[in-house]
Amino acid sequence: MSIVTVVAKLVVKAEAVATVTGELLQLISPTRQETGCLEYRLHQDNNDPRVFIFHENWETMECLERHLATPHYKNYIAAVDGLIEEKTVHKMTCIA
Image 1: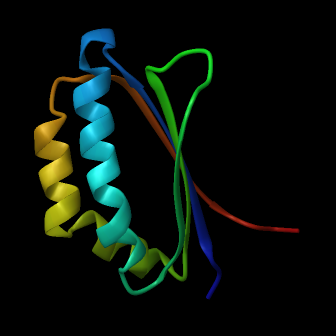
Image 2 (image 1 turned 90 degrees about the vertical axis):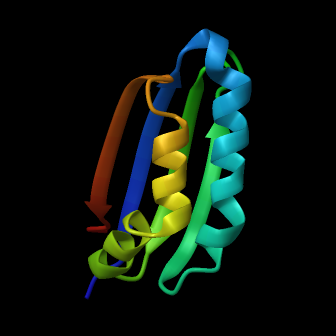
């Protein structure tokens, strides 16, 4: 099985940056402890604080799918409902 890399981009509503930042930071510790999580990094754009990028590596697609079903991920989704302007998620496999 191949490692799954996720690159996710969020653009947050300007008035919600502090709230969403707090919610995103709460995901880090429990996610990094999940079985199959190899890397889970959150970045914020230096020029536009509304833009966040996740870079993730998972042992398998099944590990990623289990992550998406965890209570901490579901709590995050509920907490940021209506606060995200744009979300793009790329699930990729390294080919070279």
